[in-house]
Length: 151
Image: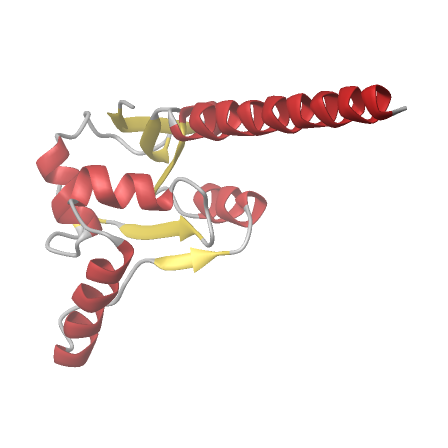
C-alpha cells in the first residue's frame, strides 16, 4: 500500500511539473508574437520607423502624412506592456507618470481605450485615421501595417 501511495504521489508531482511547463510554453509563445502598428487600409501612408511610432504614441506628434490621426488601444491587452516597453522604453508606472504630467499641463491626453476588438474594428471602419497596435495574428484585410515590432 505504501508503495502505491508513493507511486501515486510521484505521478501527481510529474503531472504538476508537466502542467507548469505547458503553461509557461504557451505564455512565452503569446509574448513572442510580433506586434503591428496598424491603420485603416484606406489610409494612404508608407511604413513608419520606430522613432515615428514612439513620437505618435507619446503624443509628440499627431500626424502622419500631414493628416491628423487618432490613437485608440485595447483596454487590458496582454501585449500592451510589451509594446510600451520595447517601442517607447517605458514601464506601465513610467507611462502613467508621463501621461499624468501631460494631462496636468494640458498638453495631451493618453490614447482612448476600448473594451473589445469588435469595438476597435468598428471604429477603424468608421474613421480611416485611427491608429492602433495589435498582434500580427489579429490584423485583418481592412488594416494596413505601418510598423512591425519583432519579438
